[in-house]
Each structure stands twice: as C-alpha cells, then as structure tokens.
Length: 121
Ligand SMILES: [Zn+2]
Image 1: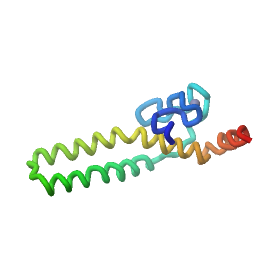
Image 2: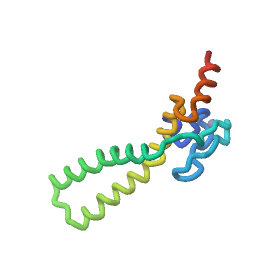
Image 3: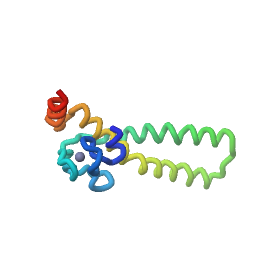
Image 4: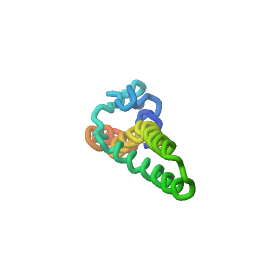
C-alpha cells in the first residue's frame, strides 16, 4: 500500500504505477508485473471524501466558532481547500487501494500472489 501511495509498482517499488493522473499502467515498465486487472473503481473517491470531510468540516466549524470570517472568504477558502485536498489525495489513495488489492491477491492479482508465496517457500 505504501508503494502504491507513492505511485510506484506494488511488486518492485521502482516502476511507475500510473501512466496518467488516475490511469493505472497496464503493466510495470520495470518488472513487468501486470496491473491492468485492478478494480479500484469508486473506492478511492469514497475514501477521499471521508478523509477530506474529516479535515475540512472541523476546520470550518472551528473557524466559524472562533472567528467571524467574511462571506467572500468563506465562499472561496473552503471550496478551494476542499478541491485542492481532493485532487492532491486522489492519486495516492488510488495507488494505496491498488497496492492493497495486489497484496491480498484480489481480482486478477491471484496468480501474482500465488507466485510470490511459492517463491518465498
Ligand atoms: Zn514493478
């Protein structure tokens, strides 16, 4: 999950996991690990909503409780912070989800996990 969160191949940790912002590469250019059969789907987006919500909502409540922010600041600061945090977190969270699926052998990663386990034994 850590390698995926850093945008690296979960198998070797060297190759790039993404070929575009949220497009997972079909295979690792470094070790050849197949990555196309991940099924992250909407799960990273749900996680980002939970994480950003737990950051922004307490900040909004604290600032509105202790300070009287003008409307224009509230109407620009909070949406901008929400969008910035969401865009910053989407790729690492998706990488972590793909890394988790790879580590536990979900979906198309079953054979890869069997090969890893057989190599260790
Ligand atoms: Zn690799």
